[in-house]
Each structure stands twice: as C-alpha cells, then as structure tokens.
Image 1 (tube, rainbow, N blue to C red):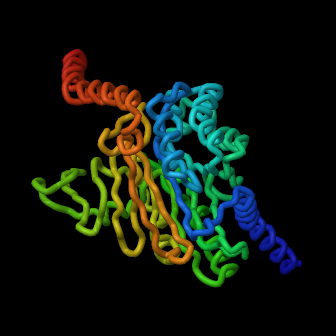
Image 2: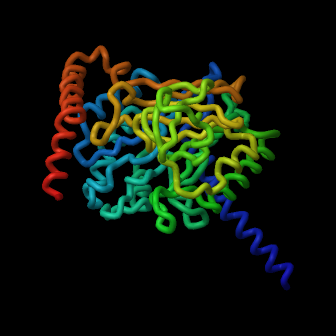
Length: 383
C-alpha cells in the first residue's frame, strides 16, 4: 500500500512540474516562437516602465518606435511594469497595463512579462494574480501564472524552436518572479527554493528531450547578489559607485554603464549557483536599477542590467532605453546584446525630440538645482 501511495504521490508531483512546462510550450508554439529561416531570433527587453494610468507620451512613442524599427520576434518586460504605489485601484492598474499592452497588441508581437517590486506595492489593490489574469486577455501575451506549485507569480519558460520544423528546442528563455520585499530580513526579496527546484527539473527535462543542454537566458527584475562579487573594488578616485564605505567599478572585461549601486535581494537564495552548476544559462538579465546598463561576465554566467525605459521615475537621459538580444540558430551558445537609447530611436522625430529636450532640461534643473534647495527647506522645517 505504501509503495502504491508513493508512486501516486510521485506522479502528482511530476504533473505539477510538467503541466506548466507543457503549457509554456503550447503558448510558444501558438505564437510561432521559432528561429526565422535565416536562423536569427531577436528579443527586445523593456524594463521599469513604472508609470500609472496616464503613461508618458514620450514612453509610448519610444515603445512603439522601438518595436517598429528593431523588429523583434519577442518582447520581454522585466518588472515594475506599472507603478503600483501610484495606480492603487484595480481599475487604474488595468488602465496602466493597457497603455503599453495595446501598443504591442496592435503591432502583433508576442509579449512575456515578469513582475517587479512595484507592480503590487502594498497600496495597490490589484494583486499579481489579478494582473497576470489581465495580461492573459491579450492575444499577444504568452506569459501566464504557473499556479501554487511554485512560489511567486509568473515563473515559466519560453522554448524557442528550430526553424526546420522538427520540434527541437534550440534556445530557452527563463522568466523568473524575483519577488517584492523580504518581509523577514528587510530589503528586497529573492528567488525561492521551489523556483530553483523547478528550474533544475525543467532544465534537465529539456536536456533529455533535445539531446543535450539547451542554451538559455534568464530574465527577472531584481539582480542576483553575486553582482557584488562580480564588481571590482577600487579606490575613490577610480570608483563608479560607493556602497557601505567600499568603492566599486566595472571590471575590465565588462561593458556598459555602472551608474548606481545595485540593489539585490537581502538573501542569497542560491539561484546563481544553481544556474552556474547546470551550465545552460548564458546570462541573468535584470532591471530594477534604472541607470545601469552593464554586461559583466562572471564565472561563466553574464550578469546583465537593462535600463529603465520609463519617464515617471528616476533615470539617466543618456542611458534611458531598452536592450536587444540577437540569437543565431547555428551558434546558439553565443548571443549578442546591445542597448538602444531614447535618442537612438527617436532622433528623427523632431516633434518628440523637442518635447524630450524640454523634459530633460526641466529634470536637470530639478535634480541639480531645485531639489537640493527644496531638501534644505524641508530639513529646516523638520528641525
């Protein structure tokens, strides 16, 4: 009897893991996610739109023009897609999501999302589950809620199939819910053990089904704690940032910009170690830190940051933009990536660039002149 129960329990657990994976494959197949006949596949990654129901016109223009000009096969949103602290209600949050999803729906490009720490801030009455259910009403959406078997909302994989039509998965995308805030330890949250177990099991299944490890990229909102080991300690003169009295810069083998202190979760969950051990993840891509645009090779796994594309929160007008990933079917273990800025994409739109220049002037005036004065006035009153 015990043996029978054990077999049944194992079968149930296997179904819990296999069902989301099968669902991911079904949605990917329906969306036609496969390498093009020329062997190419392009991903366009937007992060930290972080706006409310009245999405900035500058951001809307950038989203639309970026998709039109860069012609991605897949769009990925890496969290803080809306500003939950600002939207508040289900109605307002729904309208906020519509602002950008309507653009992608009109352009007919598949979209997948993960959540960030601001999507479901405490004062937002629309939960992650509610938001995911709304995303699922869009035909262009291929993201989904995997259910209660895995912690979080929106941890799933997206297989990219061969152009040959033989059903072989040539590349894989991991979409990971990195949580919101750590209610036990304080600070930002981290990926949970159930998600790591799911990743390992799904990776092993893909390896068995496709005759070897399937190269992949992982996308999530909050950066892994290994970022502090990947950065190079230096002196004040050569530092890009300072954190806890220690100075850091990008290592010589890195690319991009280190414009602010990274903000990983308080706890190291072992996610990076698990992906490094499996050997299939080429890079872990995060948003969260709005002005960082770096790619740092570290122990065989690139640590990658995509800048904000939004205009309702802080950012650097020199880096504000998106990230592109180009994949090749005949060289799937090597990818290329680059960032495009707002100005790169919108430079030929005279009217939009005029508004952007005015916006930039006002923000520069506030950040460098007016805000410091305002802070001094507030401090004086606080005394």
